[in-house]
Amino acid sequence: MKTVAIVQARMSSTRLPGKVLKPLLGKLVLDHVLDRLRMCKLVDQIIIATTTDEVDDQLVTWCKKNNVVCFRGDRNDVLSRYYECASKFNAEEIVRITSDNPLIDPEIIDEVITLRRKSRADCAANNLEKSFPHGLDVEVITFQALDESNKNALKDFEREHVTQYVRHRPNQYKLVNLPSGGDWHNIRLTLDEDADRQLIEVVMRLLGNDLRFKDLIALFSEIPSLTRMNTEAREWHADYNKTENII
Image (tube, rainbow, N blue to C red; front, top):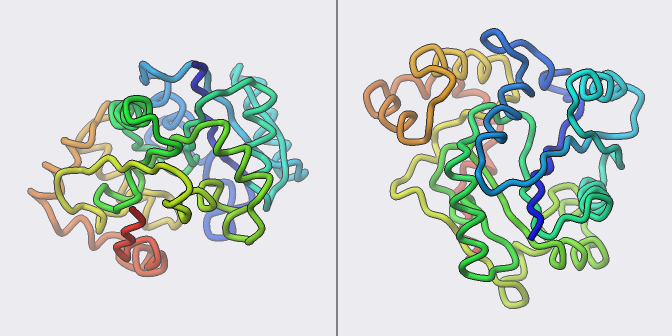
């Protein structure tokens, strides 16, 4: 089975333009994402999936310069972008990663992949029931389920968010969730606002580049006031922070 991690990325973020190529403690945000993905034991290939917009030419140039495989597709129809990318590179199992999560945990990614394989699920994730910090999100979907989604999904949010067609049809698709063992989804470690960047930098300075989920939990348990650094950003993204029990 060929497992491909597809990282969706674009330069035209409205809240923090060009965030994926912004510096973050000596490296670019995208460098952190890729470095952590390369630590995964069960991922065979990593691909940046960006858009055909002219603004993303800069991202394509960066990928070429750094020997990173890049694919270009529709800006808004992210589902079709993923499907076409997965088809081109013969992916049988797709790991969906977003480029604004520089603290993704390679061990958790491997755990979600393992969970999907052992359960023979159509889709596995660690956020079907939200308990991990936002920013450690990972979804793994089979090519067959992605193909069916691309053919049948009609709603805008299903086309924009890739796995939503499958996630909202638990009677049709087998879904499995990896729990965190606690309730940590109030911690926001994704990059949408400058306040997010400041918090992520503080966390990385305290824990180092090779931090893992368990390190994050220990840190926020010791210093819970850290969550106040990006309160406004967390409130802006309130939909995510609502508990959503899909399965």
